[in-house]
Image 1: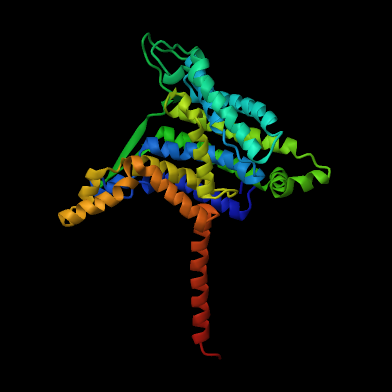
Image 2: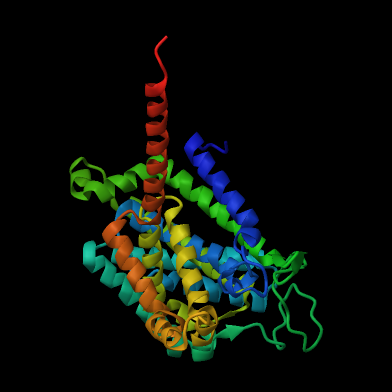
Amino acid sequence: MLGLNAKDAGLFLLVTIMVILAPLILNPFPEGSELAQFNAGYPDLMQRFVIFGIFAIGFNILFGLTGYLSFGHAAFLGVGSYAAIWMMKLLTLNVIPAIIMAVIFAGLFALLVGFVSLRRSGIYFSILTLAFAQMSYALAYSVLTPLTGGETGLQIKSTDSPLLSNLANGEIGRANLFGLEMGSSFEWGVGNWLFTFNAGYYIAGIVMLMAFYMSIRIFRSPFGMMLRAVKSNQQRMNYTGLNSKPYTLAAFVISGMYAGLAGGLLVAMDTQVGPERMFWTASGEVVLMSILGGVGTLIGPVLGAGMIKYMENIISKINDNILHQWFAFLPDGMEDFVVFLIHPFIGKGWHLTLGLVFMAVVIFLPGGLVEGGQRIGRLFRRKKRDGAVGDAAKTPAE
């Protein structure tokens, strides 16, 4: 199917089903219940799941295949965002040209950064990419204020008059896809459950599926095999007479274009952008996404992105009042003690929880969440096989 082998086609079909049914899957608890706190099926968060999934997929093409660890990938996310917002301010509010320009400008910037940074490898390469990202952040924050808006960033204003958009005087334009606004939603109530189907989410989801499909083709292509050879033993590859630099540069540019695509989609979903998207913490976040999900795997970065964004938006919202509601059945002294123990790990302390999860994954699941799923699958298959063997042993011979 679509040029994929049976295993990859099954994986792609699974991801497609998850994207389509996400509004249902991510809202397992009824509205108004205490557990509704853990529902994640609202448009803004679902959009972030798929957009940062694209960001992590692109990063995994570089880090997972070649082994080159970039600490500055947020620079391409920011460049893509700025290119998209300027396209929407000047030309049209249709998101397609904005996304295309985001990919192009991010790719060109990645070509420049990669040409310089890939002259070194290992930690020196990582530091060079970090330096480029921090320089980009500094330029966006202060030096290039007329282009970037400085600290306050850029957004669509009533004074903007895109060339191909018919806006009335003083009207604030909205991002759309041939007239369909990104914020358009349909709500479906079933009993005490409320499911929201958002146009912007599904547009971003379709783009994510296209990006995921392309990553599968890259992983299975001869080009992907060359990148694996670079990761395995670049020196031996050079001894054979093969020049690895064009391959690593191509991987770096493709990875940067993925980041630009994610940046363009962020602007399409929420028409504003600031320099914080280029800060070093954003680059570190995509590294965590890839490692948590499983470096070098196809679906791992998507799972890692979803996990981090879930914790950032759900765990961070839990406060002491919610905890007291959950443990109200306990005696007063015990209730306060339990809340005291959990308090450092929720709300503003969600980073502590993320750190503990990251440590646990690195120590016990070096292959990330994908390895955890594989272990569970092997466990069930072993139990099934042992059960079949046991039944066969009990069956008398004829």
